[in-house]
Image (cartoon, rainbow, N blue to C red):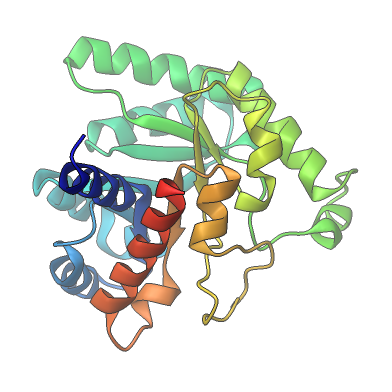
Length: 252
Protein backbone atom coordinates (compact mmCIF):
# COMPACT_ATOMS: atom_id res chain seq x y z
CA UNK A 1 0.00 0.00 0.00
CA UNK A 2 1.31 3.45 -0.93
CA UNK A 3 2.34 5.68 1.94
CA UNK A 4 -0.41 8.21 1.17
CA UNK A 5 -3.10 5.52 1.10
CA UNK A 6 -1.83 4.04 4.36
CA UNK A 7 -1.89 7.45 6.00
CA UNK A 8 -5.51 7.99 4.90
CA UNK A 9 -6.48 4.56 6.21
CA UNK A 10 -4.88 5.23 9.59
CA UNK A 11 -6.54 8.65 9.80
CA UNK A 12 -9.93 7.14 8.99
CA UNK A 13 -9.48 4.37 11.57
CA UNK A 14 -8.44 6.90 14.22
CA UNK A 15 -11.61 8.93 13.60
CA UNK A 16 -13.76 5.80 13.78
CA UNK A 17 -12.37 5.02 17.22
CA UNK A 18 -13.33 8.35 18.79
CA UNK A 19 -16.80 8.88 20.27
CA UNK A 20 -17.52 12.43 21.40
CA UNK A 21 -19.88 12.60 24.36
CA UNK A 22 -22.67 15.13 23.91
CA UNK A 23 -22.89 15.69 27.65
CA UNK A 24 -24.82 18.94 27.45
CA UNK A 25 -28.23 20.06 28.65
CA UNK A 26 -30.07 20.85 25.43
CA UNK A 27 -30.47 19.77 21.82
CA UNK A 28 -29.46 23.28 20.74
CA UNK A 29 -26.06 22.94 22.43
CA UNK A 30 -25.63 19.43 21.05
CA UNK A 31 -26.37 20.60 17.49
CA UNK A 32 -23.71 23.29 17.81
CA UNK A 33 -21.13 20.71 18.85
CA UNK A 34 -22.09 18.25 16.12
CA UNK A 35 -21.92 20.98 13.46
CA UNK A 36 -18.58 22.18 14.81
CA UNK A 37 -16.97 18.73 14.86
CA UNK A 38 -18.69 16.91 12.00
CA UNK A 39 -15.65 17.24 9.71
CA UNK A 40 -13.58 15.16 12.15
CA UNK A 41 -15.98 13.09 14.26
CA UNK A 42 -17.92 10.05 13.08
CA UNK A 43 -19.65 8.99 16.31
CA UNK A 44 -21.36 10.86 19.13
CA UNK A 45 -22.69 9.67 22.48
CA UNK A 46 -26.11 10.64 23.82
CA UNK A 47 -26.34 10.01 27.55
CA UNK A 48 -28.87 10.42 30.31
CA UNK A 49 -28.74 14.21 30.58
CA UNK A 50 -29.32 14.95 26.89
CA UNK A 51 -31.78 12.11 26.43
CA UNK A 52 -33.78 13.36 29.39
CA UNK A 53 -33.84 16.85 27.91
CA UNK A 54 -34.25 16.22 24.18
CA UNK A 55 -35.71 12.71 24.13
CA UNK A 56 -35.82 10.03 21.44
CA UNK A 57 -36.82 12.49 18.71
CA UNK A 58 -33.40 14.13 18.92
CA UNK A 59 -31.69 10.74 18.68
CA UNK A 60 -33.72 10.04 15.53
CA UNK A 61 -32.67 13.44 14.18
CA UNK A 62 -29.00 12.57 14.61
CA UNK A 63 -29.28 9.06 13.15
CA UNK A 64 -31.33 10.36 10.20
CA UNK A 65 -28.52 12.85 9.49
CA UNK A 66 -26.10 9.92 9.18
CA UNK A 67 -24.29 10.21 12.50
CA UNK A 68 -23.30 7.06 14.39
CA UNK A 69 -24.93 7.35 17.79
CA UNK A 70 -23.93 5.53 20.95
CA UNK A 71 -27.00 5.61 23.19
CA UNK A 72 -25.58 5.53 26.71
CA UNK A 73 -28.55 4.85 29.01
CA UNK A 74 -27.14 1.80 30.82
CA UNK A 75 -30.36 -0.22 30.94
CA UNK A 76 -30.61 -2.09 34.25
CA UNK A 77 -33.95 -3.55 35.29
CA UNK A 78 -35.83 -6.84 35.20
CA UNK A 79 -35.14 -8.87 32.03
CA UNK A 80 -38.47 -8.13 30.34
CA UNK A 81 -38.20 -4.37 30.88
CA UNK A 82 -34.63 -4.19 29.60
CA UNK A 83 -35.47 -6.36 26.59
CA UNK A 84 -38.35 -4.05 25.61
CA UNK A 85 -36.24 -0.93 26.16
CA UNK A 86 -33.47 -2.45 24.05
CA UNK A 87 -35.86 -3.02 21.17
CA UNK A 88 -36.87 0.64 21.37
CA UNK A 89 -33.19 1.64 21.22
CA UNK A 90 -32.80 -0.48 18.09
CA UNK A 91 -35.91 1.16 16.64
CA UNK A 92 -34.20 4.56 16.96
CA UNK A 93 -31.52 3.45 14.52
CA UNK A 94 -28.60 3.88 16.88
CA UNK A 95 -25.23 2.36 16.09
CA UNK A 96 -24.63 1.13 19.62
CA UNK A 97 -26.27 1.12 23.04
CA UNK A 98 -25.48 -0.31 26.45
CA UNK A 99 -26.98 -2.29 29.29
CA UNK A 100 -25.51 -2.77 32.74
CA UNK A 101 -23.76 -6.10 33.32
CA UNK A 102 -24.78 -5.99 36.98
CA UNK A 103 -28.29 -6.80 35.75
CA UNK A 104 -27.09 -10.37 35.21
CA UNK A 105 -26.85 -12.92 32.47
CA UNK A 106 -30.58 -13.53 32.00
CA UNK A 107 -31.22 -9.83 31.53
CA UNK A 108 -28.45 -9.48 28.94
CA UNK A 109 -29.39 -12.63 27.02
CA UNK A 110 -33.07 -11.69 26.90
CA UNK A 111 -32.23 -8.21 25.62
CA UNK A 112 -29.88 -9.55 22.98
CA UNK A 113 -32.31 -12.20 21.74
CA UNK A 114 -35.22 -9.78 21.45
CA UNK A 115 -33.15 -7.17 19.61
CA UNK A 116 -31.91 -9.82 17.17
CA UNK A 117 -35.46 -10.99 16.53
CA UNK A 118 -36.76 -7.43 16.08
CA UNK A 119 -34.00 -6.43 13.65
CA UNK A 120 -34.46 -9.58 11.58
CA UNK A 121 -38.22 -8.97 11.37
CA UNK A 122 -37.78 -5.31 10.42
CA UNK A 123 -34.86 -5.96 8.08
CA UNK A 124 -32.60 -3.45 9.80
CA UNK A 125 -29.01 -3.60 10.97
CA UNK A 126 -28.72 -4.70 14.57
CA UNK A 127 -27.04 -2.11 16.79
CA UNK A 128 -23.95 -3.09 18.70
CA UNK A 129 -24.83 -4.06 22.27
CA UNK A 130 -22.24 -3.53 24.99
CA UNK A 131 -22.37 -4.05 28.74
CA UNK A 132 -21.18 -1.57 31.34
CA UNK A 133 -18.86 -3.36 33.76
CA UNK A 134 -17.76 -0.86 36.42
CA UNK A 135 -18.12 2.89 36.09
CA UNK A 136 -14.80 4.69 35.69
CA UNK A 137 -15.79 6.92 38.61
CA UNK A 138 -15.80 3.82 40.86
CA UNK A 139 -12.91 2.14 42.65
CA UNK A 140 -12.35 -0.37 45.48
CA UNK A 141 -13.93 1.90 48.07
CA UNK A 142 -17.10 2.10 45.95
CA UNK A 143 -17.24 -1.68 45.64
CA UNK A 144 -16.77 -2.10 49.37
CA UNK A 145 -19.49 0.44 50.06
CA UNK A 146 -22.08 -1.48 48.01
CA UNK A 147 -21.01 -4.89 49.27
CA UNK A 148 -19.17 -6.31 46.24
CA UNK A 149 -16.10 -8.32 47.18
CA UNK A 150 -12.91 -8.25 45.14
CA UNK A 151 -10.75 -5.56 43.58
CA UNK A 152 -12.05 -3.49 40.65
CA UNK A 153 -10.01 -5.38 38.06
CA UNK A 154 -11.31 -8.82 39.04
CA UNK A 155 -14.90 -7.54 39.17
CA UNK A 156 -14.60 -5.97 35.71
CA UNK A 157 -13.11 -9.13 34.20
CA UNK A 158 -15.83 -11.29 35.76
CA UNK A 159 -18.60 -9.05 34.41
CA UNK A 160 -16.92 -8.87 30.99
CA UNK A 161 -16.88 -12.65 30.80
CA UNK A 162 -20.56 -12.78 31.72
CA UNK A 163 -21.49 -10.26 29.02
CA UNK A 164 -19.51 -12.22 26.45
CA UNK A 165 -21.25 -15.45 27.46
CA UNK A 166 -24.57 -13.62 27.09
CA UNK A 167 -23.86 -12.85 23.44
CA UNK A 168 -23.14 -9.13 23.63
CA UNK A 169 -20.69 -7.39 21.30
CA UNK A 170 -18.39 -6.08 23.98
CA UNK A 171 -18.12 -4.01 27.11
CA UNK A 172 -17.77 -0.51 28.46
CA UNK A 173 -14.75 -0.45 30.75
CA UNK A 174 -11.71 1.53 31.76
CA UNK A 175 -8.73 1.04 29.50
CA UNK A 176 -6.80 0.12 32.62
CA UNK A 177 -8.50 -3.30 32.53
CA UNK A 178 -8.47 -3.77 28.73
CA UNK A 179 -5.54 -6.22 28.64
CA UNK A 180 -7.20 -8.49 31.19
CA UNK A 181 -10.65 -8.11 29.62
CA UNK A 182 -9.43 -9.22 26.20
CA UNK A 183 -8.67 -12.66 27.64
CA UNK A 184 -12.37 -13.34 28.29
CA UNK A 185 -13.82 -11.70 25.16
CA UNK A 186 -14.08 -12.79 21.56
CA UNK A 187 -11.34 -11.54 19.27
CA UNK A 188 -13.66 -9.04 17.54
CA UNK A 189 -15.35 -7.79 20.71
CA UNK A 190 -15.53 -4.07 21.44
CA UNK A 191 -13.92 -2.42 24.45
CA UNK A 192 -15.42 1.04 24.78
CA UNK A 193 -13.47 3.15 27.24
CA UNK A 194 -14.62 6.35 28.94
CA UNK A 195 -12.39 8.12 31.45
CA UNK A 196 -10.06 9.30 28.68
CA UNK A 197 -8.01 12.32 29.59
CA UNK A 198 -5.16 13.90 27.60
CA UNK A 199 -2.14 14.64 29.76
CA UNK A 200 -3.06 18.31 30.17
CA UNK A 201 -6.66 17.63 31.18
CA UNK A 202 -8.09 17.32 34.68
CA UNK A 203 -9.59 14.05 35.93
CA UNK A 204 -12.85 15.70 37.09
CA UNK A 205 -14.93 12.97 38.82
CA UNK A 206 -13.17 10.12 36.99
CA UNK A 207 -10.78 7.88 38.91
CA UNK A 208 -9.62 5.08 36.60
CA UNK A 209 -8.39 7.25 33.72
CA UNK A 210 -5.88 6.92 30.89
CA UNK A 211 -4.62 9.02 28.00
CA UNK A 212 -5.91 8.30 24.47
CA UNK A 213 -2.63 6.77 23.33
CA UNK A 214 -2.28 4.50 26.33
CA UNK A 215 -5.90 3.37 26.00
CA UNK A 216 -5.43 2.29 22.39
CA UNK A 217 -2.15 0.56 23.20
CA UNK A 218 -3.80 -1.36 26.05
CA UNK A 219 -6.54 -2.65 23.77
CA UNK A 220 -9.50 -0.27 23.86
CA UNK A 221 -11.30 -0.26 20.51
CA UNK A 222 -13.25 2.96 21.06
CA UNK A 223 -12.66 5.98 23.28
CA UNK A 224 -15.42 8.14 24.75
CA UNK A 225 -14.26 11.72 25.29
CA UNK A 226 -16.43 14.48 26.71
CA UNK A 227 -15.12 17.35 28.82
CA UNK A 228 -11.57 17.47 27.39
CA UNK A 229 -13.22 18.38 24.06
CA UNK A 230 -16.42 20.13 25.17
CA UNK A 231 -14.63 22.42 27.62
CA UNK A 232 -11.67 23.18 25.35
CA UNK A 233 -11.18 26.78 24.13
CA UNK A 234 -10.89 25.34 20.61
CA UNK A 235 -12.96 22.15 20.37
CA UNK A 236 -11.87 21.32 16.84
CA UNK A 237 -8.20 21.63 17.72
CA UNK A 238 -8.69 19.47 20.84
CA UNK A 239 -10.47 16.85 18.75
CA UNK A 240 -7.74 16.80 16.12
CA UNK A 241 -5.08 16.46 18.81
CA UNK A 242 -6.82 13.39 20.28
CA UNK A 243 -7.31 11.83 16.84
CA UNK A 244 -3.62 12.40 16.12
CA UNK A 245 -2.66 10.65 19.35
CA UNK A 246 -4.96 7.72 18.52
CA UNK A 247 -3.47 7.49 15.03
CA UNK A 248 0.08 7.44 16.40
CA UNK A 249 -0.80 4.56 18.70
CA UNK A 250 -2.46 2.62 15.88
CA UNK A 251 0.55 2.98 13.60
CA UNK A 252 3.11 1.97 16.27
